[in-house]
Image 1: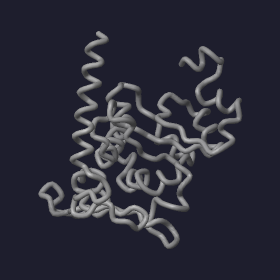
Image 2: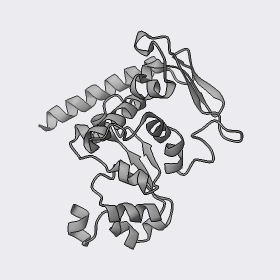
Image 3: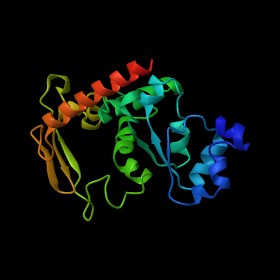
Image 4: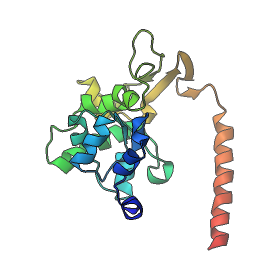
Length: 217
């Protein structure tokens, strides 16, 4: 890696030498790490954000999530940016994470549905250092929750709810969203922002960027 070339240390050991890992740290992707580096990350309580769809699209490699979990690391799920993910759908991210690591490890029992759902909720909150506030519905925590519409044909019938959420549900199945007790989406209608205005602004900005890129070619 470039860090190795510049400093003679890996992207894990260089920040360790600078004492960066001594404070709250979140590491994204973490694809090319060995067992010793995973141990270092675990000893320092580093939170990991796994972005499987981005890693697949960019051919970045496969993060050793199984080894990270076995070492006690908190691994959450992320989407990365729209440029390398496209839809930013965390439900699809769960599905991809579960299947990717089954293929990678050649073990169908790896990354089962409960583990992956935890990565998107409780463990994700722990990776961000927010487990006392969010990640699960408990007294004293913020009321962050979604309501999923199970009435669509692709969700019928429902036998195992957790498995359905991981492998079958989509972001478009979310009917309502509550953030810290405040309803922000109700019956698929955004209550806090004017979506048509935002989308029109996005189209205009997109056209401007496209024209700028074409002029520079």
